[in-house]
Image (cartoon, rainbow, N blue to C red; front, top):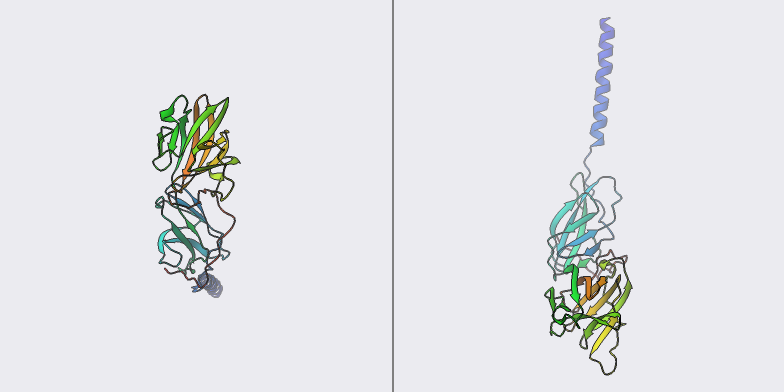
Length: 276
């Protein structure tokens, strides 16, 4: 019986040793970093930028680090980490342009190179449920200045557009030194990503304003007198009151108005290399 007991204990000890050895093999150290994440893209917001990318295929990826710089070839600084393929940069300042890059890291602490995609974004202000009134009846509350987020008289030199009711129709008007274009029906203010380069409404002979019919559900792009771009989506028109959502690009000449993920990626500059 003693011999049988010794044999039984030896079998148990051997099995435990084998299992322990397998466990050690499953946790060997890996010094190979993951591939750099791909297809980085952004969503422009008000003092924020939402960043997305494709999930890495490696099975041991533990998470991602997100970096920013003020130029593509500049020094990149870490702004946060995440286990998902989505990150919000809530420290963005409206009117500043940021370049973004993402790395992947594994459970052993190996980190990939910075992503190569040329990704930059310029946060801009936006507003919702703003109201202006028909200038024929409320001239002091019919215009709007995007740069100051302010309702103004229709004839104030800072007014970027004003609202008018005429012969039963509603109009968005801009002065002769500005431009306007109807971009058609949209589901929300974020549908229009960029200001167009052509297609602006022509001014009729003998007039000093340009105008388009204001239609609820349509989004309009305005090219202001001081070379900024804005978009306005008409939410409703009731009596003499027009309610709209808007977004405005603070950077002069920048057509970027988006808050939708772009499908296209910008090309990588020749001989470009990013630095931590």
